[in-house]
Length: 437
Image (cartoon, rainbow, N blue to C red):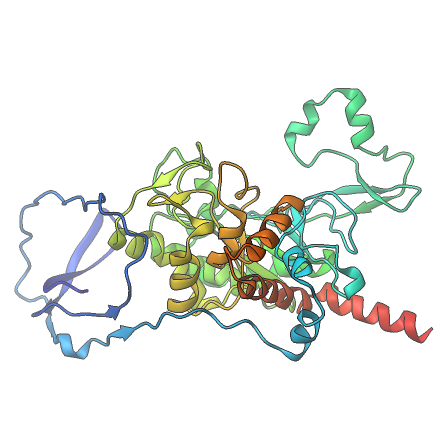
């Protein structure tokens, strides 16, 4: 709702140097959207702003009257999203068992046997369905460029093995363990993956240059094509809620409009490369790193919609990202990856999101979000996943706790991304060549 009253239009070169240049007057309260309540929490109260001296507005400033009936009102419909259909995805899904569809909804980590690997990527979709004609695709971290292993050795058996640690922690392991974990670059041929270290999101947003941001996204997309990455786990776009948040440098702003427009520009640039997708994260209210798996963000619906969801809404509607990553934390007592309100009602019903929803890494399991509830809520892909998650999902269907249609819906969204990837197109050509030769 828009409250009745005067709205000042202020113009200036910084938030501390502005002048009132126009007044918009709304005579009556106006309804701008009708939707169901989400993430209800009866204990949350709005903080009332302090009373400030009334600003004296110059007489010569334009005063524009707005009639409430001239403001359009959008009414949302809420329903279970249809399972994604295409001739190709239907042909695959019709041949998959419940367990195989569950495997599609559960990803893999940085290690393991797979059809394709971009060394150093954070994980991949399942590689266990290759006999069914479904290869895995890679998910590489961000957000200041594409995070991959710079040098990787090819062992005598043809396997890829890192030369140096891609996480600082591994550098502190005992020498004996490091000799087993890492390859000797002087004894094996090397694969090189040099990617660009772009400025952090905070710096990019300070340019106020959306064209430049789109060019950055476009450059990332070109590197994704070069190294076979399908999903880039970026842009990060949480609100700067607390100056102590350890990842504020990755995010754009404390302002949702700035965050949403820059995330949309980056996403549009990335997705100019066919089969390459951006992943908006961390959806939502992941505004601190301390105890992030157990944090409960208590927030009223007005603040949730106007601040913490608004940037994501702008980015989803403007750039149609290929994926969204659900965050570690709870919102009003419910883990986001288990929240039907956020992942289906808001993301799909209200905003029309058509892509893939994935968890943050290790965000479901013991003492965190539920595997089966994530699938039921509309979280399509559990990362990095494990056999326990697959078994829990299958058992939940067999026990009637979740519907088989929920698993199929999530599997279809994962499959949609795989089949549109450059990796799958290359895999098809390889199979065709092998058959014909």
